[in-house]
Each structure stands twice: as C-alpha cells, then as structure tokens.
Length: 158
Image 1 (cartoon, rainbow, N blue to C red):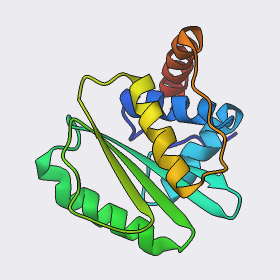
Image 2 (cartoon, rainbow, N blue to C red; image 1 turned 90 degrees about the vertical axis):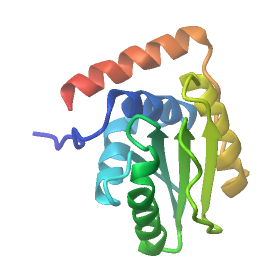
Image 3 (cartoon, rainbow, N blue to C red; image 1 turned 45 degrees about the vertical axis):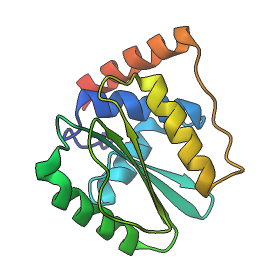
Image 4 (cartoon, rainbow, N blue to C red; image 1 turned 180 degrees about the horizontal axis):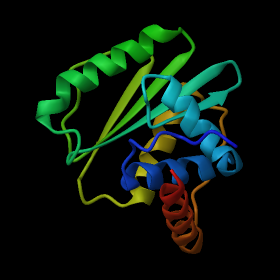
C-alpha cells in the first residue's frame, strides 16, 4: 500500500498546494511533494527543482496569528538550516510578516479574503525571485474549479 501524506494539513492548505503543483506541472506527483514536505519539518509542500528544494508554507491567519509567530519563525529557521539548497516561501494570508530575514526566505502578505488564484500569482512572483527560469502557469477559471475539486478529493483520502 502506498504511503499517504500527513493529515495535519487544512483543506485550505491542500487546495493552495494543488494550485501551486498544477502551476509547476507537478500535479501527477502531488502526494509525493506533500510527503516530501512532511519530511522537512512537516512543511505544507516541498518541490524538488533540479538540485534545489522549494518549500511552500501557507499561513492563513486562522492558524497563523500573532500567537504562532515564534513557532513559525522557529520552523522556518530549521528549514533554512536543513541544507543550503532549501528555499522557503511563506504566504502570510491575513497574517503579519515574520520578523526573520534570510537570503533563501521570501514572504508575501495578502488579505485574508484573497482567492487561491491571488495567492498563486504571489507565489509565482516570489518563486521567480529564486528561480527565474522555472516556468509556472496560471489556471483559467475552469481549471481553478477542477483544482479545488481535485484537492477536496485528495484531502478526503489523507
């Protein structure tokens, strides 16, 4: 039987990860990328990009308010200390920016009412700072609906 990703992710995190995975052309390795995230400090998702690893942490205010700042900073430091080829993107959705600066860390702030596509656009811009040659696509409305359905189905499994 195939190993499943951790069930400690919220549905919101799984949906956003599906959007990013599709954008990177990695929807077929969705569970593998979630499992890789599990092995790296229980991150939301991790993508092998050549010799590097891109980690995305989706931080909506409901789970990542001010009281979680220190935990988020500690986790981010551990990720960055893991290896010199690990790059971390934190999407702070309705949350405040972490008081942490590092050359392999990028954070972006969005309103808590942001849609998945808005977050994906911010992820794309941020990823291109680290990896300018990585191609990422933006889904049309029909694909966005499919990705939400896809993620909900995967969420039920995990």
